[in-house]
Length: 54
Image (cartoon, rainbow, N blue to C red):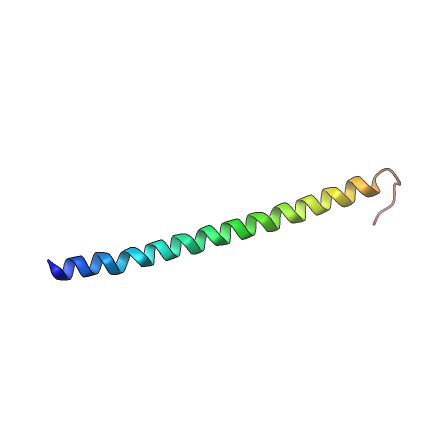
């Protein structure tokens, strides 16, 4: 029983760490995507009235 308890306690932080890493990666990728799309639309909106390709 002590062996089973140590196995579950050692498996829990690994799953939590992987989930935290995946969440951090998802948030970082999401912010990068928003920044790229926002920057693209900002350049497009800024350059469209002048009809100039920046």
